[in-house]
Amino acid sequence: MNPHPASGSSHPRVLTYPPKSSSVAVARADVMLWLDSLGGVSDDGRERVALVVSELVTNAVEASPTDQDNVRVSLAWRNDEALRLTVTNLNSGPAIPDTSNWAPADPSAERGRGLGIVAALADRVAVATVDDEISITAEFATVDDHAIVDQHDLNEDPGA
Image (cartoon, rainbow, N blue to C red):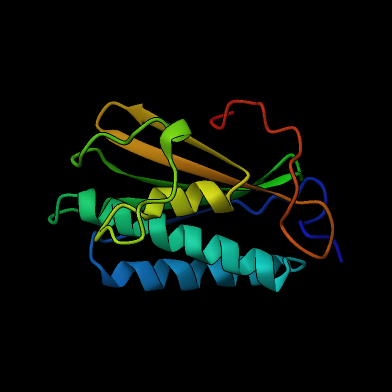
């Protein structure tokens, strides 16, 4: 079984959640259902994606105003080579550091581990700010039916 849908059938999905802590588990479950509907992603790949969804949606919920349903999770296969996961919210939180600085936080730190985890688990990450929204995109390269692993040519703009 291929780790991605047949060529030309990327099955993109956009999900919207209220900026509440309960949205994290719901978003994670929805993304896992989407991956299951496509088939072929290994348990390890699913776990990597689930953890990244949890981290990014948690950050988005914490940075979003509480009076709007404005956390979006977008999913798609890019050129049948990578799963692209983008989490978007209103940009009301602190500035997001350059992705080259996303390193694991000190284990004793109370906060600040999320972006380091995302950088460690995704094959590529990008941050884009447009108007009042911020989007963080994580890509997971696909190579075979064993896992979402290995680097492919991911040098294209994540918004392409």
